[in-house]
Image 1: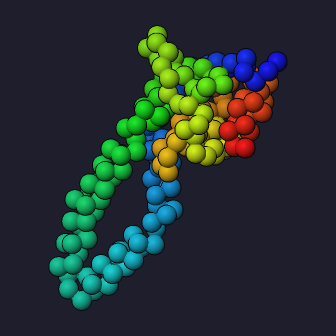
Image 2 (image 1 turned 60 degrees about the horizontal axis):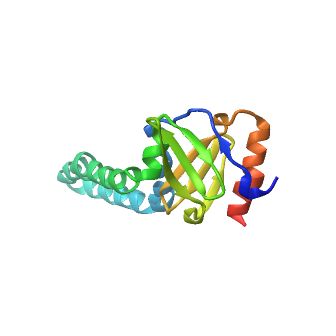
Length: 161
């Protein structure tokens, strides 16, 4: 069987939006943790000299931090890959890319040449199309182990190479 004829369809699945967004936040924190720690340390040190800086810490926590989270959510979690990751759908995988069967319609979500990198975890596959945008396919969405092996050998390894 040639690679051009292989087509896989998964079982219906979805992930929670909290789980999807949590991966994005963890990646951002992994990259920017030192800046956040430096700001927090400076504000706590300033509060020791003047209690009014405690109010600035609270303003940062309740005004600035929610705005930053909204900005991250708006820029990364509202993309088509994110939408189709968190909705109930079945996925049709072929040589061109990934199509989602959602609301009784098949929609093209991802082309293989748009995939920048793939992260394989014990729970599933994260197909990154940007730094913080990805399409998620859990392992339990596949019907059996043979289908997972075909997916990995035919599609994942060809995209990685």
